[in-house]
Every structure is written in C-alpha cells, then in structure tokens.
Amino acid sequence: MISRAAARHYRPAQCLLTQSLSATRLGRRGLATVSHSAPPEPLLAPNAETHSHVPSFVPTQHFIKGRFVPSLDGNRTFPAYNPTDGTQITVVSEASAADVDAAVAAARLAQPFWESLPAGVRGAALQELSFIIHDNAPALAAIESLDSGKPVHDVRAELQQVQHVLRYYSGWADKMGGQTIQFEQDIHSYTRLEAIGVIGQIVPWNYPLSLAVWKMAPAIAMGNTVVLKTSEKTPLSMLYLCELARQTSIPKGVLNVVSGGAEAGMAIARHMDIDKVSFTGSTAVGRKIMAMAAESNLKKVSLELGGKGANIVFADAELEEALEHCFEGAFSNNGQNCCAGSRILVQSSVYDEFVNALKEMVRETEFTSQRSEYLSSCSCASNTQMDEEVIVGDPRDLDTTHGPLIDSDHLASVRQYIDAGERSGGTLYGGITPPGLNPRGAFITPALFTDLPATHPIATEEIFGPVACVIPFDTQEEAIELANASQYALAAGVHTRDLSTAIMMEKSLNAGLVWINTYNRTPPHMPFGGRKSSGMGKELGEMGIKEYTGELRLVGARALAAFRPGRGGGGGKKWC
Image (cartoon, rainbow, N blue to C red; front, side, top):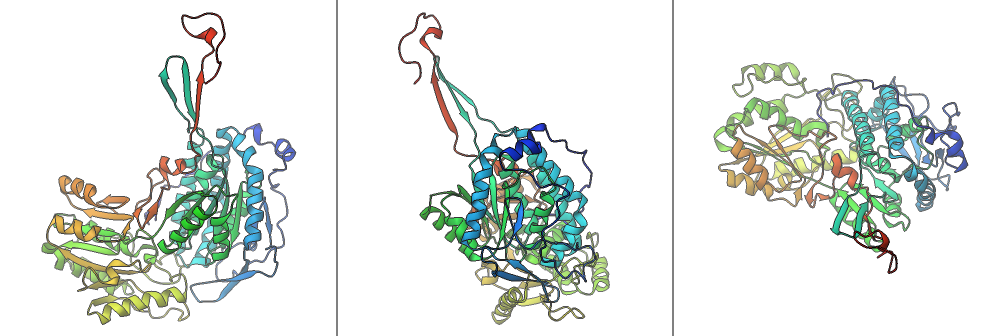
C-alpha cells in the first residue's frame, strides 16, 4: 500500500498539549492517562533472539481502558508464529465476546469527554503519538517484521506513512464544520457535525499497523472512541503501538485493542453499543459483517474488501517505467495486497517485448546478477533503473525485497492456484521455492503466467499472493471490457503517453482508484476505497474523516417576533 521509495523523514517540533488535557481534569472523570513512569504489567515477551531491535517487553494482552489485561477467561490464548521459520514467537490473549464488551464499555465511558475537548487538543494528541512512533520506529519495524515476515526495509517505509497519516488527521481535527442554510428571512438554519460515538474496527494481517492507523486516526480526530481488533496472525505491532500510546496524553478508553479471531470480530459487528463498524478483509467476510450490523442495531458500515486490479499497458507507454510499475504493482508485499495489479493487460503490438522483459525479471528473481545482465541487454528495459534488485530472503536483511508469505497454510493456497494454472496449459515463469532458505519458512518467488484465458481463476479470483497473469488486447475498447469483467472494482492502472487515452480510460474503468503511469500510490491526502464487491466507504483524505462523522444535526430556529425586521412587540411562537 506504499511505494518502496523512501519517504521524506523529518522530526516535527515538539507538540504542546493545552491545559484541557491536564492530569487533574482527566483524573476527575476517571480518564487519566497513564504516567510515563508507570511500570509495565508483567506480560509475556516474544523470543527476540533473531531480531536485535525487538524490545525485551512486547505486550501480548488486550489494551482496555489504558491498561494491558488478560482475557476474562485467562486461559484463552493463541500462538503467534514467525513466518520466516515457522517457530512460535509467543502466545497472545484471545478475545471473547465478554472481552469485547469490556472494551466497548471503556470506549463508551470515554467518548463524551473526548468529543467535548477542543478539536485542536485531539489533533495535538495524534501529533504526539506520531512523534513517539518516530522515536520508536526501529522497535516497531522489528516487531512487525518478526510477526508478519515483511522485509524490515518495507516496514520502515510503512512507518513513515503511519506518521504522515497521524499528522494529516491531526490537522483535520479542527477543520470539520457544518454549514448555514438560509431559506427564509426569519428562520436561521444550520447543520453541526458530530462524532458517531464508539467505533468498532477490524483490520487484516497484511498491513497491521498501516491499516489500523488509517482507521483509528480519523475516528479519534473526530471525537470518536475506538475498539479495534487485530488479526490473530499479526497482533504484536499494534499492541506495541498501544504501549507507546500510553506515553501520550490520549485519555484511557479512547483507544482499546483486542486480539482474536472470528468470535471477537462477530462480537464487534453484532454489538448493540457500537455505533459503526469499519472492516478491511475478504469480500466473503465483509458480507457477513454487513449482515450482522444490519441484524443488530443497524449500525453504519464501511468495508474495504477484495480486489483484482488490472494494470493496462498501451503501446505508446514509457515501457521501461510501465515494466517497473507492473512488477511492483503485482508483487509488492508478495501480492498480499487488496489492490495488487495481478491482471497485466498489454497491447498486442508490444506484448512480446514487454512479456519477455517481465518474465525474465520474475524468472531470475533469486539470481540478481543474471537479472541485471538481462536488463542491460533487453531493448524494452535497457534504461530501466529499478530501485533495488529483487531478492527473496530473510526479512531482517536490508537487501531483501520479498520475505515469506504470512504462513504455510497461505503458501499452500497460493500453490494450488499455480498448480491449477499449469494444469490448464498456462506457461509459468518463477513460482519456485528459493534455494538456501529455511524450508519451514513460507517462501516463494514471484510467479507469472501467460497463455491463460481471461476467464481462468488466476485472472478472476483474488489469490492474495505473488501470482500474476499477462493478457493481450488489441483496442482500447477491448482493454476496458477485459478490465471491467470482474466482480471486484478496487484499483486499476493505465500506462500511456496519450492524455486523451488516459482520460477516456479513467472515465471508463469501473474502479474506486485509477492510477495513470504509476501504481499503488496511497498518500494520506487521497481517498482510498472500492466499488462492487470491493466494498463501500473511503479511507484517507477528507472523505476518510467524514466516514467518522455522525448524521448532520439539523437546527432550524425561528426568530422572536420582537426581532423580526419591520416588526415590534412580541407574541406568537418563539421557535419552530
């Protein structure tokens, strides 16, 4: 969800909160923040021998009302595994419906006071959190890399975006307002934006910190409180973020985090005291979330679901750049990306040249010197300057660009698609187990298919792994038809030098996001979200914070008769 190009890194000036967040005032309301000197609870810490930056203390319990607490049934835990070698890192508290109830109660208690604070104070608190993340980035990156298998280089880039998102929404906190509506001379009408209340948020395992902050930052900025559920596959980095949040002036109960699987997720979706649920994950689960929200208290829902992005290359494109964007679009984060451009559509006149370059990049991934020699001699890619060589390997190594998949079960699922493609007569490049790596790790090199029909499952289903297919097209109309022939409508890319082609494609593609001559760029300022089976609602940008505003409060006031122009005296109704 973020480019591998390093984001600009800067240290903002120290944030100063107003006296509205003084410990005395918060303490009177039972919402006092945790002291910076408060000793940590005696929680389990992961075995960090293989990741030097992993701190000795990493929380593994639920974060409720400013404290780390075990499950109400203290025996409920689940293991967290290292995808690099399959070993168990630690055990994590598993939430039940009762734990969700406790988190919701804490959030409900904190919400009225949090919303009542000056909006600038809420924004300042988010700024403060961004500063602390900056100072603790090495530890956060090491934890997420250990837990998810992401290359530490990637996580560091993602953490820069996390800080950017927090700062972006800290600025929005005091800029949300209603409007005045004048429709009769003696009636003053206006709208007022309010927080929704308690927000339930469910995040997936592919971008544990980034997607959590995409959701919690605008919700908190607007005056809501949050109950967030981590994925049971990657809980550790978000729990450590909660430890950092304890060092800020965010009152206890504003941010609550539980870990667990389907039971906790269903409890959030069905909860009668949660006012909105925001979910990122599969389309199948999204449909269930929507049904449970409707069957309970008809809570608001936003869903960011699956995708099967089409990356379209026209003959007049800058082929060297398009080659890089197609590779990164399909295989960044090992294809474990809802907007992955895993359908690469290439105009027939340049199809052979483009595919030859792309397949060699894929096929020689694990042999970087051979790949470099090929690129230097390939006419299509003779001037290509990739940001780095493509190396599948140990995520601790700063040169690694692709680590393992999330676990062995997911690797098995990806291999089933690859096997199905070969059985159907597709030509496969890559998709092998890299030599020399831990055989218990979930490693696989990028896999590229040609010679498959556009209706094959590899071209239509979300694999959520490093598998892409290349499909030729002749005309613009055919490209549009191929791209739109999907149940998903999250993202698409277009590569062309022709402005008219770019505009026509953008208008014709049924996708929530269309990138022109780039791919997979998600700055905080631009809204992100899909259509059709890819979900509803937006994250990021101004539209992202509007997702966390309540229904407009409509006020219509009739002026007192004594103050109506040209009238005197009183009498009559004072208000409408």
